[in-house]
Image (cartoon, rainbow, N blue to C red; front, side, top):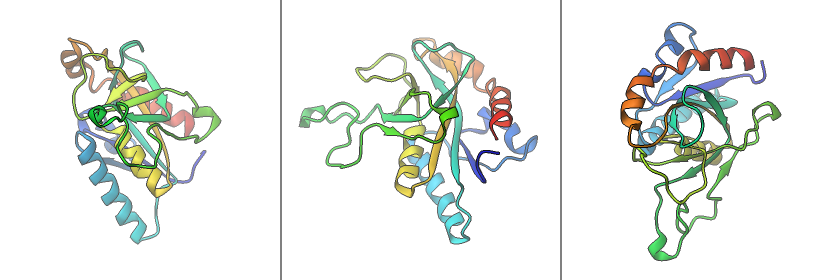
Amino acid sequence: MITKSVLVVVALKEEAELLLHKYNLDVIYTGVGKVNATYALLKELSNRKSVNKLPDLVLNFGTAGSHYLKKGNLFVVNQFIQRDMDVRPLGFKLGVTPFETYPELLSFKYNDIFLTDLICATGDNFETQSTNLKYDLVDMESYALAKVCYFEKIKFLSVKYVSDNANDSAADDWKSNVALGEELFLQWYKNHF
């Protein structure tokens, strides 16, 4: 085992119901979007901090879209940006939160095995077309989870199952593929932990 304790964070049970029932992993479900993800993870970490049981690693698993990565595959992601923060009228670049001193791209170097340099762009909209940001995948939670871990000084990693191509058929593809990545993730998890 590479690390002592891993907290797996998933947005929806539909993405990973077997994690608890079949394999009894330490899992929380956050709900969809940045606000729900932030609240659920902060609440869980606060509860664990009070009993001195913080995880060594927060591991996010879920679905993602990609304009070029192949549907049906898993990808390890260690870099995260916020794709829907748009304050360009005030002179800030797309993806930059105004007046923060923290980097716009959150990058985690957990272990050489996991280094991919893939970027996941998070936003509170279901992406169906490309934006002007540089990224490899899109989702609705990982940047928020990464930022919580960045502030709390906890290692963070995300494993994404590409369910759609973030295009006009993304919604239908996601509905058809939402539950298909879990077995791949469980195999990946067993191989690494």
